[in-house]
Length: 471
Image (cartoon, rainbow, N blue to C red; front, side, top):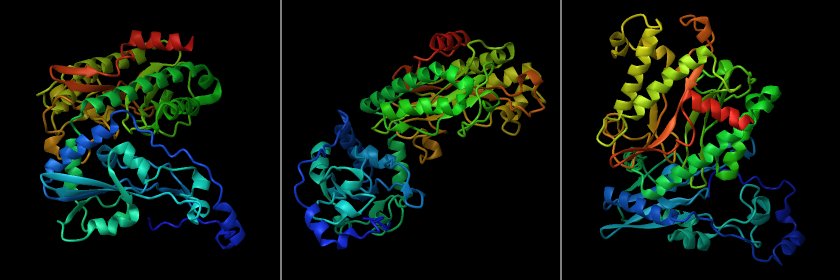
């Protein structure tokens, strides 16, 4: 159910009675099983319980969404809304979860599009959803059995949302069909969901670790392809190499992979990936595998393509490494979220001052009205991580950047320095050097776990790693 055209066959097979009669008969069983990762349904049920306690007596609706149009009659690959996935473990397009108040909690109902059978025109005529176009899809029974949820046809959504029950708290702007049946968008619902998702349960942490493990394999794949990239394949060859691993191990890349070689390394979001890979340059690889459960890793390593840092490259790398190590040491329960950011910035500012790159003192640079060092690092040095690469973004400031770290929070630490090729404030030997080191951490009861530590971070370790994989 949507307001989008069905992209029907212009040959109008619907009107051909002979075809209609012939196509509806003699179809054997098809594989419509829902493949759910162990623990996903139970985790989603626990997440719904947490949301239920936050909104007693309120009715809640949230949709999975629709694939956005890429061009004309082609769509981007569908990816479910993160809050919807967190609450259901379902990744079906055009689905809507409704949580009805019941006693001290809620009863959850999942509304889904029932696949068209052979006796229905959409079976063969709908190029977006028809089985003869896209293959068999799970039905209501399969989804219900897999997720332990009551599943009803999407056509019943309007009935589910009307009546004398309380006003619906809904996330609008995800699915026009849901939007048509609810009132105002609830920013409060989005905010509460974001803040609930800050604390990962054991199942979620296991998903993040699996995503990181797959990402480590992808980084090794890239290193093994450096020779081909240098010979002419360039950044796009390496991008395709990592993204192939992401598609094999999970749903795909968790975000547009950044493969920035040589003078592109200082560009924070170099996602064009259309440059060459110089043998004597650095490669900044920022990439993460998103699992089929939609949890993603976010890891960055910067390494010398030829296996050895030049003196200038090593100088920059070692300062970033120092900031990275000191920043990670600040990650522990009860610490200010901003502590690791402030520590990284202090270390970087001190180093830049020692190199004569700041127009004043370190204290002047670190003053909120100064920030001179940020010319070389305009981005932050970390963020929450989970279903979204920049997770929990709808949280209030007092629950995020102004809050304390708690056990179960997952975050990245990623200081860097970025000296653009045309930046005349830095000496010529530093121009065109960009370095970022990013690890994924989980806050524990007594500190933190670095779940991406299978990849080295020292200049010696990363050089050895490149030489080993290039063979």
